[in-house]
Image 1 (cartoon, helix red, strand yellow):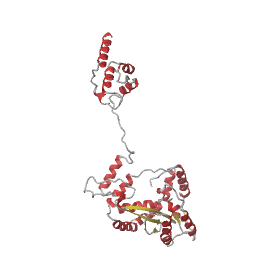
Image 2: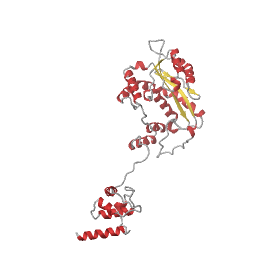
Image 3: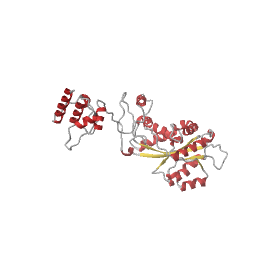
Length: 353
């Protein structure tokens, strides 16, 4: 016991005299675990700990700093507890929206041309948008009211919405997957505001698609009334509706855009006698025309195709709306009961649609 005390006094004298003990590899690997300790203090703690001293005793024997302070025993205790452990730093940025396994599948589908680049953008960038409690209650009420409606009811509904097309790629998506094997991918451009854009307005019914109308500028209330009078009404009145109410042959659906909800627009609907489906905020998954626009967008930018001028892109958009979009109309209308049931099951939150 006497020899142990003598060794302890000598070691303490050496530490206070400024001779550093060489830190062990375990001590050197945790430099960031105790940022308030210097390398010299870590060496002191490591040497005193080998003498089976408690953290309180070690803290009392440490050499004072220039400001006459010493590390607390809690700092010493934390240092000894984490000695030899590697600190794992969380990567910055938002959480991954897809798993590594799904990412590999997407890349494999792109390589084999079974999935287009814009479609991968849509899958990879799909994130849950915020739906407030008030809107969730409204979505639930709407879904419970219409979930048991037969298909014959939905056949008399017109769904409408706008869509923006850009020269450089689909509007609203910023990431893409490119080929890592196989043929060299074509070079892509990234210009300010997508290089140029064009807005279109369209509607769909069970019996066909409306004329694709290009909107010049923003779709305000005045332009929207002109679209209703010059595009929707002539087209809708020619469809073979099967409602028993001749004064209101169809039900019209629109979103809550400012031009749609304007007082002058509502007065037009009341004057003409158009019945409106309930407008829901934050509910693109309950409007099948959104899926139709996504299909057209994928076909326009098939395999990452880009355009140099609007005159090159506009004919492709019109052609896809005329030839590709009608193939999916009936399937989208038949999905309405499933969409509403999914909304009920999700408690009014976002669904997979």
